[in-house]
Image (cartoon, rainbow, N blue to C red; front, side):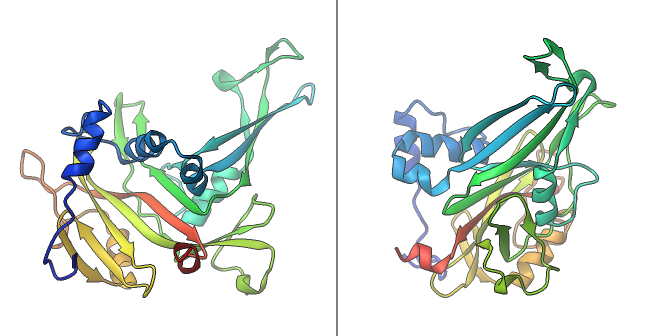
Length: 277
């Protein structure tokens, strides 16, 4: 199949039909994160899950009695909540995800030792990182003032390479000096970005994908596939909406162009070496 020249597109009929046999409804709007998790869980092969599973350690420390409780859970992706004051860079959003947070007010957890709800310090850290790290940017928040869910459209700058320190509690930022000379980090290289165009109720997905052999980027939009480059992708991802993008456009029932946002990012250790295994 030569998608680049448009000689033949990928037929997804058999895949969709097989999902119907699993009693999945494939003819309605699906959230990409949920769909990804359903597919991996349906495969139910341990070796496949290990490719994506990331282990997170969550700890709660009571600020009254200093009792700490910890829980380790595995996830197929990291879902990062965004806010109006979120960092404009992915490294900053990840670092904020790992920072300590005091749970107080209505969010106070129950302390088994104190036998009452207490202010607790919450902290998350990575126990293990997978071969392929999937990051979900959650841009939907509940607007209390207007009593509805809204979408945050603030652009998030995505790096070519993500670096985690070996203790997995800190993400190296691009401004760090000579990070490649530091042996105490794990490196992930970007190879795919999935984008959603639309609003809370409806929309359309497309993807930017990098070839694992020659590092050529492609824009994949249904059956249309064409070459692109990283500078073009970064420019488009900085845009607030799709009004100036002639390649990807989606309209609602009122024929109004809807804004878009990055929703799914995939990075792999070693990138090229990993996919040659």
